[in-house]
Length: 248
Ligand SMILES: NC(=O)c1ccc[n+]([C@@H]2O[C@H](COP(=O)([O-])OP(=O)(O)OC[C@H]3O[C@@H](n4cnc5c(N)ncnc54)[C@H](OP(=O)(O)O)[C@@H]3O)[C@@H](O)[C@H]2O)c1
Image (cartoon, rainbow, N blue to C red):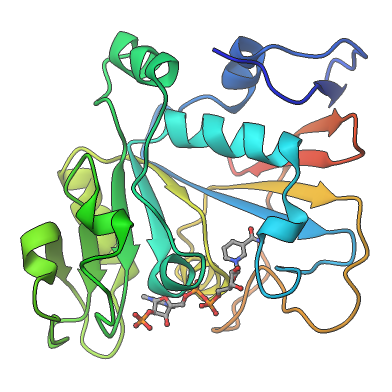
């Protein structure tokens, strides 16, 4: 598997030597129980975006881990807001990553799961229209589907005034999708935190001051603070820190 931007380990077991992808895979891994991992990138001063998008925060080291985390999951959960705004395309993995998945008894591609209360979704968006695996949409019971959406995605209706995320994750587990990676965005992160569903946060800290304006990586429903122990700190040559915090 192609090793990308140089990344080394600061803690635990510090070493200045760049790590290969196998070492990174071992450090992030797959959990031995149902697990929800969040992955975000932020600036030193906590911004969720630069000029409205996450791309301005995400350098090569963040992209390297981003790709590996996609390879490791059963399903990739994303909020409709981020899917629309960032123009999500179909989740594709290169042949080496597909081979890794096959060798580890996984499907070739993870399943895309979209959380949307309104079903304001475009079935022609490549994330749906071009998907190698039929996506799942978690939505509210009475949300009206736009024409064509049921042709390209399974709708799972749970919850009356908002998507019931506890029931939604249980349904995904029932479908064999136990290892979940969530790429945000902030409203969904806030809701998952409030429901106490977040097991892990992988956070890339870009060496940038974004200044005032952008929001945080979490938003929406306030919830009690919860402990989330540090599990590793990686460092990239460009000064990006790659943190992993997890309950277990
Ligand atoms: N820095 C990063 O790593 C990162 C990662 C992701 C996103 N972002 C940034 O975040 C911004 C997008 O944020 P956003 O405000 O649109 O938030 P979001 O969390 O991406 O999307 C919110 C939408 O998610 C859907 N949703 C479904 N169930 C929900 C629930 N239980 N709770 C909350 N939302 C639920 C709703 O969609 P419907 O409207 O369809 O009902 C809601 O409007 C963009 O600027 C993007 O670039 C940054």
